[in-house]
Image 1: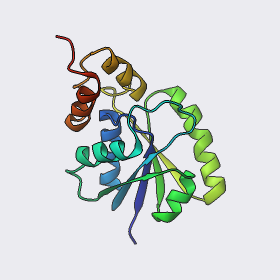
Image 2: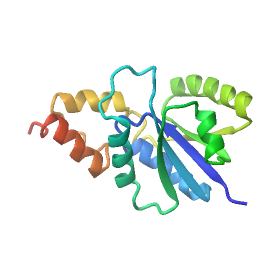
Image 3: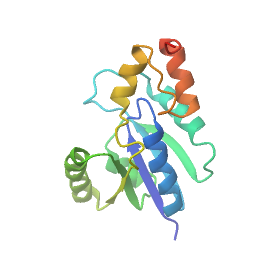
Length: 163
């Protein structure tokens, strides 16, 4: 029986913490589906869904068992559509756990799908898409925190980092 992990997120932008979670999930599951979601709680988006999907695909090209989808529906519907064995979420800090636990419990009640939490390494525990957007907007260098495909898109959008 094939196991499928669903790794959801807004990924705006996709960063090395996300990359680490997907790579680790790829070692645990037969297939990993990365779902770039339109998050109605996040009013402003830096990249549209298509752009995020392209950046994620480029960043994960080295993982043959990973596929990328973009969706605008309930996560449990996506889990059902892709036959997910589990939803995989990365945790950086304790406050992530509080909100993720609520979502995990709701998703389980709605669909029966379990959520597996993967803690990020300390190397990436402070990296957040929100911070990367802000640093990039002011021409800071975020190349150490994002895959090359994402860094290229950030430079296209905001210009090269200041020396």
